[in-house]
Structures are given as C-alpha cells and as structure tokens.
Amino acid sequence: MDEINASKQVEYLLQFAENQSLIEELDVITCRNALLDLFKIQEPYFNEIEEKHSKSPVSILEKLLDYGYEIGLIPKNTTMYRDLLDAKIMGLLMPRQSEVAKNFWNTATKYGIKKAVDNFYNLSKASNYIRMDRIEKNLYWRTNTEYGDLEITINLSKPEKDPRDIAAEKSRIQSNYPKCLLCVENVGYPGYEGYPARQNHRVIPIKLKEEQWYLQYSPYVYYNEHCILLKSEHVPMNISKKTFVRLLDFVEQVPHYFIGSNADIPIVGGSILSHEHFQGGRHIFPMAEANIESSFKYSKYPKISIGILKWPMSVIRLSSVDKEDLALLCNEILEKWKSYDDLDADILCCTKNDKDTVCHNTITPIARKSNDKFEIDLVLRNNRTNKECPYGIFHPHENLHHIKKENIGLIEVMGLAVLPARLNGELSKIKSILIGEMQYRQEELKESDELYKHKVWIQQLIRKYGTKCDRVNVDKIIENEVGSKFLNVLLDAGVYKRNEVGRNQFMRFMKYIGFKNE
Image 1: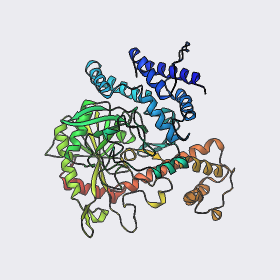
Image 2: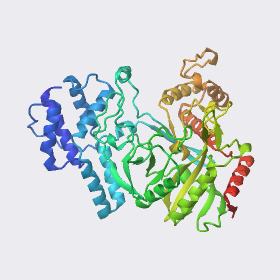
Image 3: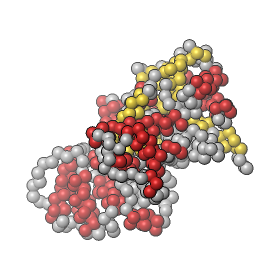
Image 4: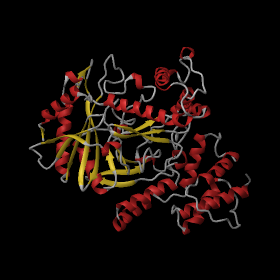
C-alpha cells in the first residue's frame, strides 16, 4: 500500500472514532497529526471519503497494520506485533483517563448507572480493547441437565502463538512494571513481547466502602459485559468479611450486574491470586436460576432467607433486604467453614507440612440483586490433595482432564465451561469417526497424537453411537456429551456429593453453623 492509500485509511479511522464518540470534532486535527506522525506520512488525504458506519475498526486497522509492517513500525508481521501496534494506533484516539471517569459519573448522575455502564462498555469495544472480531469466533452451546441448562464455550478468541513470537518473548528481559495484568498501571501501557499493549484501555474509579477500586472490562469477554473490579493496591486475593461487604456494596451501586470473587487459594482459585479482584457482568448464569432444595432458618438473623441450592457443587444461598446483616452472616459461615473438619467427607480444614500449617477451606462468593433483595451464593471449596487425587480431591478427576484440567474458578462454578481451543479440532476428528469418515484404531494411537487423551472416551462413544451416525445429528451428540463431561467436572469439584451420604454430610455442616430446617 502506498502513502496516499495509507493516509486515506487514516481518514476512515478518524471518521470511525468520531462516529463512535471516541473523539469529538475539535479533536480530529490533533488526532490526524498524531496518526500521520506515527505512520511517517507527510500530508493528509485531501479528497472526500465515503461515509461508512462500521461498528468495528478492524478492517481499517488491518490495512494500516500491513502498511506499518511495510515501513518498519513492527519487526515481524505476526499477531503479537500487530496487536502491539494496533493498541498504539487506537491509543491515539482515546479520551484521557480523567475524561472517561468524569463522563461516566456525570452520565450516572444525570441518566442513571445503566446508561453510564452501557457507554463505557461501548467505548471498550469501539477502542478495540475488547476484540469482538475474535470473541465472535468462540463456539457456544447449552446442554440440558437435571440442574438446568449448563453453558459451554470453546475459547477460540486467543490466537495461537507464532513460534517467532515465542522466541522473541524468551529473549526479552522481563519487567516488574506493571506488577501484574490487573494493576491499574496497565492503563495506557505500551506492552512488549509477551505482554499486551493497553494504550486503548481505560478504567472507572469506584468506591467500595471508602476503598478505591476500579471497574474495567475483560478483554476476553467470556459472557455478556464481562467486567473486572480490581483493587487499587497490588495485594493478594483474600476472602474475608470485607469481601462480602464490597460485593454487596457494588451490586447496590450497579444493580443490573452480578459480582463474584474467585477463591483465594490454589487449585480452587482463579489464575491470578496475586491481585485482589472480582468478576461480574450482565449475564444470568445457570446457577442464578437454580432452585432452593432445602430451606433453613437462623434465630440470630430471622430476616435472612437461607437455603441449599440444587446444584452440582455445594452452595448456600442467602437473601435479605439488609445487606449489613447479610455480610455478617456470610462472614460467620466463612469462619466456621474455615475451621471445619469432616473426615468422613474427606474435608480437613488444615494440614501441616514440615514448616507451616496449610489451610484448605474457603468460599467462592457471588452476589446479585434479585427482586429488590440482596442475594449471595456461597460455594464451599476445599483444595486438599492426596495420593489418589494429586490434582485435588475436589477438582476434576483425571478421567475428565481430556476435556477440562484447569482450575474450576468462579465462571465454571456458576455453570459456564470455558474450554480450550484445542478441543475444536479434536472434536471435529471425533465427529468424523462417529459418521464413518475417519478410521479409528486405538491400538495405533501414539501418546503424541492429539486424540490419544480422548481414547477411552472415543471407545465409549463408539459403543454408544456406533460409527454410522447421521451427519446432521453428530454435532448435537458431541455437544451433549461434552456438556455431560462438564457436569461431571462440577460434581467432582463439589465438596458434598449429590447422594444421600453427601446430603447428610451437608446437613451436618448446616447444623454446625446453627441453622435449623424450615
């Protein structure tokens, strides 16, 4: 592409930015000059351009990224380097952080919090911080179970790493700034090989009980309006009374969003334990629609509704109009659970190694507003391991690792499986086996074969469905079977099993707290 065509694409990008309210008319000249400077273009495109009404800048950016590579702005034409450059480009079109925050709270005051949140979400998409073109590639379906419809997604939005990018990452000296991907210092950060650029990233300051937190969106958006609430300081995850107070304070301020926290210990926690944060959004998860199967009362808090949820994992649901009492009861349950042992159920709150006492019991909490009441789900977690279950007693067992091996965090707990991209190709091959297009000989599989991990499952599927399945039905067969596997993943992660023995053990803990059956 020559310089004239590149300057034309700059004009299209300016038009897009103005249409999406990233910039205003008075900003156009400043932003044009900044883009011309970046691309080493001598003068702007002087001819008229046609009016476009695109919702995404991607098609324009792709052309400019090609040009950027041609003129040497990036050393290699790989996804990693292109992503670093496109964040830099969009960063030149972003309003200042102070403007974004001021506009958010002015809109919230004048038009309500929902309008302010909607505007901020649209900004995060228009800036290409949320890469909707990639997220739309994700596969999604629902599988009906006795607990409701579980949600399954195969995450195709993260591009596979180019070997050249991997080599560049290894040779790069790692930085301690920002301290992690969640730190507020990522706002405007240029990134480097192996660390994402965030010039097009903005956050909203929000007070939770006089503490400074920041609202942002996840760039991966695993569900609708997937947001992250992060603490201003880089401090480790810690589930405590303050957690419940913060969660309930947030849903009071943003009542159309739920908010939850990953557990604060390995195996049952999320992928980032080093920075206190929550995740929320505008999505009704399967767990939110689950029914109460046993109700309780507690004389200490007579106005709080208490119940055990009909869910594959072990969940106590509390609801009340009084969020202060709710936080107090949540903390009481947490403290009693953290010191609770039940050897018959394989639950030990603590074990000792050579030097330290290791605590195993914690909670994954989720809060929301429901019919003008505050509602909070407390998912009981334990991360103990033993010889039979080296990955975790209450973790997906090894027979399920071919589908899901990673931690069962907040999102999975609520009923949404986020499965790895590798499954897309592997499941396609399994479908080919079931419709008879591909020969399958288990004895010829090598450990290096991508289907090796699925060999037991494939044999089970062949016995159940044969190898002459209808091409129309095979997709649904595989979707249901994967959904069934995810259900078993959640059942494995539940501390109290979904049988009579498990129910009695759960009741024993409820009585230990002081709850009585209604």
